[in-house]
Image 1 (tube, rainbow, N blue to C red):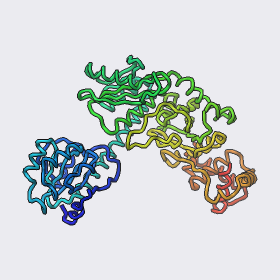
Image 2 (cartoon, rainbow, N blue to C red):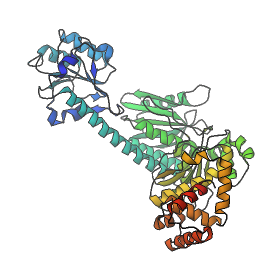
Image 3 (cartoon, rainbow, N blue to C red):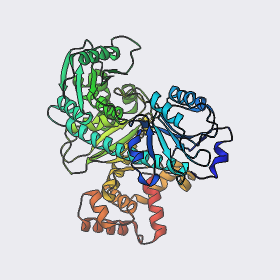
Length: 513
């Protein structure tokens, strides 16, 4: 313990090291004790505890300033009644007490050791050479490592669930994969508790009955039903999630343990099952999906807007499998479900891009964000494992056709640069200073000699900084074909395409078309 920290910790107000990230997942006390460089030693209380925070205080009663789950660090400056002090810590929900020896106490007071043993609070001896700040940094480092492991676990689970959703028997496959990922039982139930599909080890009869009763709590048979609920029966953790689609189905889970990423994994399964379990997605979702296809094939905004239920903004996404395999209807549906939408154009044929529409309209059931979590933004795409995505900027319903073309270009750019996601941002900067009408007229006049294939090739080539190979990958043609087309562009436009001024003007014009 460093002496300079003593005046701050004894000044009356508690001192807390600010966290560098989310306080979850919790850190087992054993992991902190395993850090030999800290020299910590448990001398009283149980060995098992989960740490959520690190807090330093020299107050005689820090109870009002504790949130629960803290490793409280103290040198015992105002310690006069160990039994009362420990009782207040236990009442506040502190996870453990770290007591620094010297300069206030030469050893940990025996009365404090007895109080911690009696009241079940882990007590750690902190050697004089270990600063409290070093312990705090070690805890946050362990939390960051645990958070990284949890994110990797969730990503792997997401990919496994999406792959299961693409199987010929998608609903049982998703349930089986979910039970495997969570190490428990996954059941699809009707609103009346009838089992539709199940996977994983069956819990004992009492826990199974409790799970069925919990499922009825979230079954959407009456207004105001919660979308999810949790409970504990003995040593079994129970969860229930209402599915979308208007069928009253419920996903029920029974697991031996509950980790911080389990809610996220379950949420992914809820979205997938909402899409897969409801026959044909339900009439409303099917109509909206058909609206997407009609819009992308050229329907007028007046026809599309009533079916979409909103004027926007909407984001168009083009997607291709990274392994080059064609995407069938189930695979495309699983992609849409993982993005939180049923608006998927899956009738594109082999070798074609899947098109997805994200927007503010009503979507299939999504799980509500837990405390400390951020609810997903339906119009903001994120990378999906196993997919390469190109997305437009959010656009109103009247501009969806143009956004569709933009998304196609963004996908080509993503494939060429091997990026999981490319978002085409709206034109801004100096280009925004030119009135759109004048800019479009200038672009049409400048690019008039070019056919559509030549203009697309030139646009792609310029966006990839003149790379022949990347342009060939993006367009799916040979690099010599790219060279020939670019050479033809230069001839028709009568310009030197090696001139940066020429490239800049052409890029501006191409962005207006």
